[in-house]
Length: 620
Image (cartoon, rainbow, N blue to C red; front, side, top):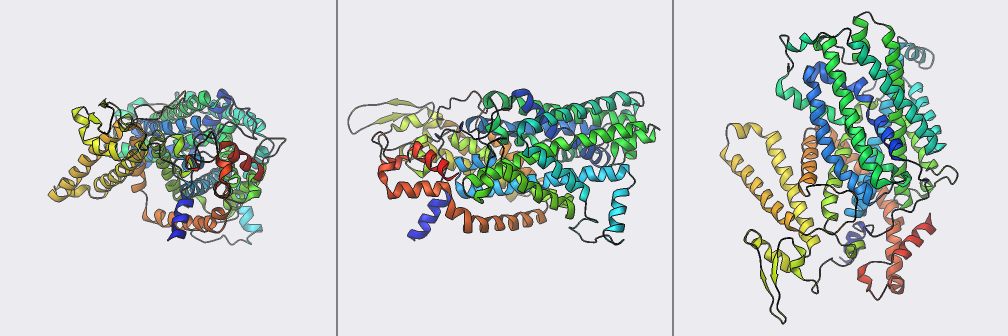
């Protein structure tokens, strides 16, 4: 039992929220404008050339513009939580580091492991899309030559393997990998050039479309809402993935000159630019050609070709090539997550190396480039993209919940030490809006405002962190139950089924009750320039949005997700658990308590910051 207790404690060990996160071996060379360009380059482009055609043709029609607006608002709510974390903990590990601070080591490893897969698949998928477009422009010349001379005329036939080895997609990734290894400044300048090119192509395309537009198509028989309100909402779920690159810019936190200023601005600029460009393109294209006649796979080229404009095909080809900016940003972000995990010894130590000349994690960048190149060359990555989506959504949930938990965590509770509240703390100070009449002696009388009287038994017995943490956990469980009922048992609510209606009503009442308790918990003062507004409501709204999207995924996605996480747990058990830096710090403190002595505090108040930092730096 003692051994199991130690294991349970070890896998929940956390990084301290009071550690200095501003120190880094990476070069701080990214300003607000450069970071904004990275956000635009990562998010604008793929939606215009890939997703919009599918949404317009098969899901929403001209009302796709509303789908993009709704999806943009939802993503903006989620991004607020990322911005607070990125400013408070400016580390390149992004969601991995945030989970380490908020939930502990095992959750951090799984979050980082899933984020690595999701972004790796994204890099391979974008390279594959570019390769497919070049093949389309050359009438499948590259594909036919490869099948004829490499495969002796016999294409591969497998559900997961691609038809032929895509050397072009691999070459694109390798070139990007080399550019990233040369330094952030070089890749950032290239990204700026690609962003200008992409925006210019979109502007030329929109200006040209005006000459072919017939706005009466929106008021034709099919109308502006051919698929109804349901089409708009389903389209919003599809358009949601166009915005998901917003979290990648937080991986550059250690290279940003002023994270507190740059990250919120760049995040908003990226989301706004993505929403505007995709919405306008969807709106204009449906005026140029009836949505029923649009080719979902090559929307832009088919629209202009149908009007006899062939020179625009060349312009669009330049724009598609410029979307290599998405590969640059995504590749760089996942390389930094891998480097952070390796620096904490949850992955292999060699991947933690940072080149002293360029200031970038060169080994993790090259390693990732090789993996992505092989994946793009052999696998049909389009079928793997949905598997990575679940990892992205789960990381969004972890970040949103983490914001709520850390708002109520005192630095004294770092490293699994003492609670932020003990018998010497005045209980009434742990909740907001409570009025206390304090008298000396053994008796203490507490008078509460009437609406908050039910919280008295919690205040007298538990710390703010414990009350807030368990309140958040209960709310997430209850929200999940409500979403399951609404999504999968909606017919029983319409009939209506009295048992299901009572169950749903009870869940909603419980959410309101627990939410009221959470709202009364006094938050720790955080000297951030930016914090998520309207907590706990905005973070919980972000959690609800992600739960809904997760429940809409196919069961096979869950199966693959569990298998991938099972593989990750084997890596953690046989390597990460034994070599963790946090584990070494705690073992050292337990062997020599004098190392933990700091201004007369006991060992339970957490290890000395200087000891942690020196041990961490010595192992790198």
